[in-house]
Length: 518
Image 1: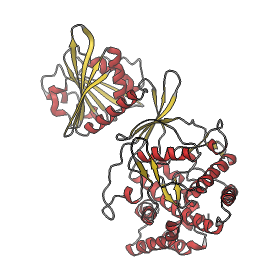
Image 2 (image 1 turned 120 degrees about the horizontal axis):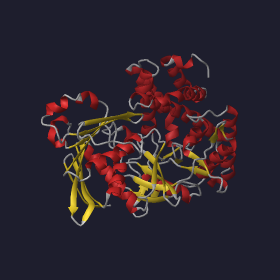
Image 3 (image 1 turned 90 degrees about the vertical axis):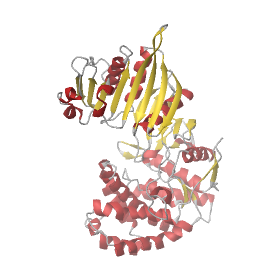
Image 4 (image 1 turned 120 degrees about the vertical axis):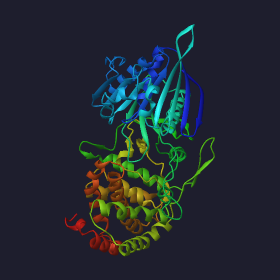
């Protein structure tokens, strides 16, 4: 199957495919099924016998997960409804209708609520459908190629960008030699990135990372969106650069096997599923190697500009005062009203920001290192077949910044998703300090401990806001289950004398946090 033309106009994407036979039509239907969600409308057009019903049946079977589902043509019943754990699919055929009112008499509006609509001969009642839809037109090729078809797939409205991204992914997999791989969704993270496992028929495995360029949000300060102020990566160039940078420093990150930087598509080495925790919680030996990897990295002189083969260089941004402050403000923007059910007056908010500014000035001006930012259990894998620190596989680092070394240490030892006993936390900090002193006898442990407490409080404050935002804005309430753990981390860090005034602010404005002692 090969694409021979693509064109874009306002709110429309067109993709033409030469489909060799029925098997290829069925395969395409399985691919299209991955594109659809409830509420989507797919119209099928073309001559009688061109393959609309064959495609529809394959699509229904793919969405439902039932490969033997009968899925008869609705030519005479006009409408067939399928319901199950997958949701609802409405398959309609309007070839025999005389007027739009014929469809209304079938209870069309009620049947279509929260369903994927799959409609043959939709042009006979076009007014029933929204401006956002996917149309697939089937055309015969030539008499001597009886089974071949030309499929013209058109994305209208919001479907234009969705189809363009789908086409780019399909062509990326084909060009990189992974088109025949079995694809399976892999649990993602709190971001908009998506991951899939890829497995070829010969058993070769890899990870597909789908991370389109980050669209700018509304400007909130200095004419910039939150992502720019917080120094979040705008595209996958950061991932590629830092992955190769970590490898150059003797650590394990996924090798980049294929890439499309413009579309945000990567195929990377699959480092497995063995982590640093098990059913009993943190595995101390693996955590020790993980903190040792940080000490190894932080003891080295690291570049702030990284090469990207064939695509210039990547400048690692600073974890500056503006970035650190915009993160703590997430607490008053989301956590205070949504979780604490409180209101912080503008004056109290100004004091909050000013107190944090004073606490973070020294942190932001310290000699920086690579701060990977998400260095915790979900993003660390155990690679027993490798040696030394390379047994720690690091998989999430695209938001790497130039910041204080204490940030990633506290990310690891005060993990939002798993509880580390206080004794283990202290042992890990001591192991880190010993390793740093071995590399540099002048390593200042007292200054590091102060920064550890400040950044522990900063990070907990940020995460409390992020988890509240994930629930309220993004519909991901499961992150709230981790909030009690993060609240304990915050109270623990606030015990440091350097944070006395900030602690007083929390006690005054969020007294519920302190009703149960940590």
